[in-house]
Image (cartoon, rainbow over all chains, first blue to last red; front, side):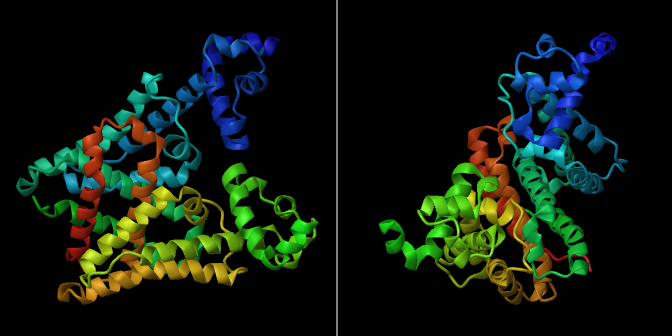
Length: 205
Length: 205
C-alpha cells in the first residue's frame, strides 16, 4: 500500500484523470468509482472521500473538459476586430472538437450530470458559452445597423452551426457525399464566410 | 414452425424490420443475424439466404432510413418560390431528426457500413442529399447575383447547420445555457432567418 500513501494527497485529482481514461478506453457505461479505485490503486471506499457517487465524479470530469475547452478558446490571438475575432473563435472551436473528440463528446454529446445538482460544472459550461456570447455582443456593438441584434439568439445560431460543422466533418455519412476532397477542403472556409455574411445582414423586424 | 412457414415469403423484410427494433431497444452493438433470426422465429441460418453478414443487413436498414427520410422531405408542399421551398425543406429536416432519433442517428451519427460495398445504400444516401443540393441550384438560378454560387459548397453549409440545430436542440448541454424557454422558442426561426440571409449574400470572390 506504499502506492496509496504517496498518492493520498492527489487522490481527488488522480480519480478525475483516471475517470477520463476509463471513459475514453472502455466507454462511459464502464465508469464506476470501484473501477477508478482499482486503477488508482486504492481501496474501494477511498474515492468516496472526495465524490459522493459516480455522477459527482462525472460532473467533475465534465467540468474539467469545459475548463480545458475555454482555455483553448482563449489561447487564440485577438486582433480587436470583432469580425476577425469571432472567426478565430469559430476556428478554435472546430479545432478543439476535431482534436479532442472524447472531451467534446462529454460536453456536448452525452447525458450530462444534472446541472442543478452540480453548480460548479454548470458554471464552467456557462463560462465557455459566454465567450461566444460576449464576442457577438462586441460584434453587434461595433456595427450601428446591428445595435438591436440579440446576442443570445445569435450565440445559439453560431453554436449550432459550429457544432454541426464539427460533427459533420467527423460523420461517417460524409463518405456518402458526392464531394471531391478539394471541394471538401473549401467547405469549412466557405461556411465561415456564410456565417459572417449572415451576422452582417439586417433581419426583418 | 408454423410461424416460420407463414413468414418465409417476407423473411427479408421481417429481418430488416426486426433489426431496426433490436438497434432501438438494445443498441447497435447487439445487432446480429443470430438475434434477428431468434426474434423473427426462424433458424439461425435462415437470414443468410438474404444477407451475407451483419454489415449487409445493417446497410439495408440504413438504406431504408434514407428512403423514409427522403420520402418525408418530399411530403412538404412546394410553393415554387425557391427561398420558401428551401425553408420548408429545413423545417422538414429538423422535424424528422427530432421525431425519428433512431433513424436519424443511424444515418448521420453512427458508423455506416462501407458505402463502396453497398451501392444501394450509397445511392439512397446520395438521393437524400441531392434534394438539398437541387433546391440550392434552383435558389441560385432564380437570383442573378448568385449565378456563380456553388451549390455543393452551400449544400454542405446548410446540411451542417441543420444537423447542428437538430442535435443542439436535443443536446443535454442545452440545459446548461442561460436561455429562457421563450427565447429558445425563437432560436430556430431566428437561425432560419440567418441562413436565409447568408444564402442571399454576395460572397467575396
